[in-house]
Structures are given as structure tokens and as C-alpha cells.
Image 1 (spheres, rainbow, N blue to C red):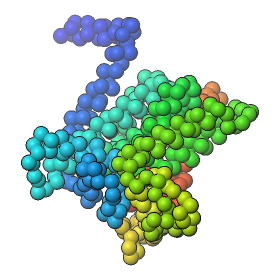
Image 2 (image 1 turned 135 degrees about the vertical axis):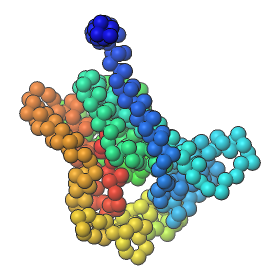
Image 3 (image 1 turned 180 degrees about the vertical axis):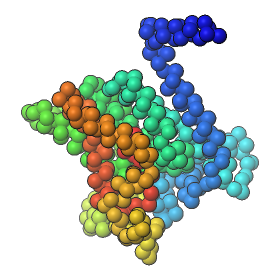
Length: 398
């Protein structure tokens, strides 16, 4: 047994040093992903349904049925990405046209497996991104921390938009960084499509636009680029970006009432009421279901929680309630909801990075990581009142 063990160790050591080392190095990551898949598949059947999983699923089903008009009070902030969670139900209905169900539990369980696939895709992205920038050790650690994160273990399998928002925000920043480095149109198209799909996931991903603008401004100023921004090439990029986003958002809402007059509806938020003052002059190029839903999201956030007409209770943290939330809500939630060893490792890594910052060029890579984190941390802490759980904050975790 001892001799066999030594031989196995020798073979494994040579494999890791040979021409196929990269393949063998993937095995631990694959093992982690397989364990994650098995654990989460078991959990999917054990967890009871959350209060909003059924509404997420129902909105996805309405889109699959071709209903472009949206029941705004009922589905409010729901966006078409939940079509993916409804696909198992749709396939089952195609196979058995006469099928009828009285309870949605089976459909929710089936839809959770789609969220699980998105969770695994996000893990693979984190591994690839970390490997490309920092090597194998960092890639393995990043993947491990993601897979054992209690927040992703809890929310990564639910029928909701949370895991898709995390995935598309990470994909958007990843492809934007690869495009900025390569300037290849293929990377720009990938960035544009991921950005657009993010707009079908969660309204908070609208803020990816200022994030991208801030990163671009920092990079441009740091390299002291001269000349106009309005070159033919830049205008081409902007046109492609706008066209892709218009098409994806409109198609996701089945092109319902695209180019509708802005004053066609009565709005609730102060922003949209102001915009409606322009009357028939403005034709909105996006679906009315998308814009009206955005209006309601802004309105409920302005209204706050725990007041008449609100859709959620008052934000609560550290034995205190507040209608419009607390600036420290997500910082405290982070300390409560994230394991202490990970927080310690995170702080240590930041210290190590700052100590060795002279050997690195922050503007080559880390600016793509820090700007989204800082932006969303400031925005959601200071300007976002719908503080009902850390799941709204999870988009910066990857």
C-alpha cells in the first residue's frame, strides 16, 4: 500500500509539471463544482418556497404566453429574465398539452434548477477571470470562497432575478475589461449583449451605465488621451451598443407599445411625472411595460417602507426602524451575513495589495473591480431606501 501510494504521488507530481498540467489543475475546480451541484440539487427539494418565488415564475409564464402588457401592481419590479425559470414548465406543457396543475410547487422546484445553472456559470466565470489575471492559486481560492458563501448557497437556487443580476453584472465588467484591453469588436459585442441582458434582470443594473462611464473616464484621464471622443469609430461603438440594448429590452418585453407617447399613462414617481410634462413631444423608444415598471420601482423607493401604500415594511437594523433606511444598513448586513474568516482574509488581501501596489498598475486591472463595488456601496447605502435584505447587495460579491 505504501509503495502504491508513493507511485501515485510520483505520477500526480509529474502530471502537474508536464505539458498537460493545466488539465490536471482543473480537476480540483471541477470537483468543487460537482460537490456544489450535488449539495444544491438536494437543497432545491428541501427548501420551502419564498414569498415571491411564485410571482417571479408567474411573470415568466406570462411572457412565454405572449402577453406583452404587464400587470404593474402585481409584478411591479419583475423583469423578463424569469422566462428562463419558466422554461421547464413550458417544455412540460408542450410534451403534455392537456396538463393542468393546481399548485406551483413542482414548477418552482424545476425553475430552481435553471437558477442553479446560472450559479454554476457564475462560478466558472469567477474561476476563469481570476485565473487570467492572477493565476491558478487565486482562481481556486476565488471559486472556493464563492461556492461556500452562505448568501449564494441560500439565494443562488431560488426562482428570482438575484443570481442572474450577479451573473450579468460580472459578465458585463469582464467583457468590458477584455474589450478595453483588446479593442476587438467581438469583445465589445459580448459586453453589449451582457449589459442588455442585465437590463432584463434587475433595475439596479441600469446603474451599470454610470459605472462604465466612470471606469472609462478614469482610464482615459490616466493615459492622458487627447482628441475628440466623437470619432467615427467611437460613434460606431455607441450605435452598436444602443441598438443591441434597444433590441434586447424590447424583445424581452415582446415589443409591447414601443415608441409610445410619454404622457399616455399616469405616473407615480416624481421623475416620470416631470418627464410626462413634455407631452406628445417625446416618444419613448422602449416598451411601456418596462418604463411603467421602472416608474413604480422609483416611486416605491421614494415612498419608503412601512407607510401606507408601501410594498415592504420599514428597513430594520440593530433594533432600529427607519422609513427610508440607514446609510450603514448594508455594511452591518455584510458583517452579519458574511463569515468572519472571509472578512479577515478580505481585509488581509487588501492590506497586502496596498503594500505591494508599487509593483502593480491599478489602472490596468483593479479599477474594473473596485469601481463597481464602491459605486454600488455608496449608491445603495446613501440613495436606496428599499433595504429589505442583503440579496439586493449581492451583485457586488462576485
